[in-house]
Length: 313
Image (cartoon, rainbow, N blue to C red; front, side, top):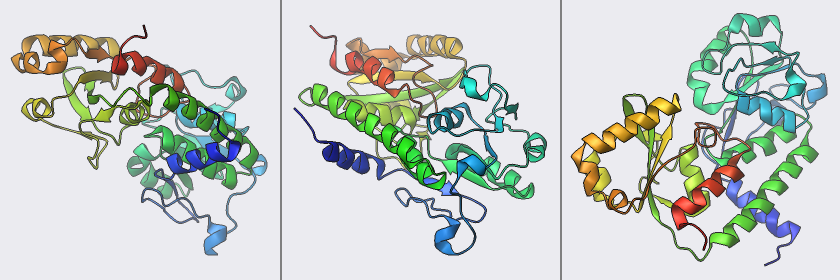
């Protein structure tokens, strides 16, 4: 099936409609899903952000740094990370600490015009930025849709509309093709568990892994929860009778894989799950199924395909 460029853009617009990006400082906080972003220029409270070439910008997470590189935006500060490789264009940028704990003193010395981070860490980072007199932008990276909504809005704010449109077009072309491959395969029900050594929670449809299951055509048995992750007892999980159980790691993946193996072996209730009886329990690779949306989502969706639909004959 062939699709026009305008048709692909309509799909992209529909997919991106549920994502949100929030602004601090001189801009309006649009925290509700789908609210979009209004700059201070629109509200009459300031000059807004329009030209990345004349701005000093800090990114506080590897995922955000990757977005900035693809939008052709220079950064004066980037996160420190031993688990992620940052784009080489930022080799000379100052390291400002981890995504979970950026160093405000280092960031202040860079005199940034704005600091950009993931919305999942806004509650912690927002008051610290305010106390330091800094402005922040928070991007919803909890879904693939949120990733591209953020890209679209940052393209407008930073004068990178052309680069942003190219990335959104790339996403919509990929998704059309992927959707057509799986449209006649049904929608298996899926339970997603997110683990740390010694504990785990349920990943709902609001989480990044949940968004990948949805894009892949699966139905999360906890799709409609308001939070990204919830605590649920195994009896409730059993009552939802998932076709497939997916197990992901928030951190320390090798330890989490062993923790899940021990849990499923020692807790008798798992033996009553149809997914366990049918051998439909899968451990997801950590580099593809983390907490934030990344540009390797096509590889993650390809990984999901045989788990949800079986191997191609």
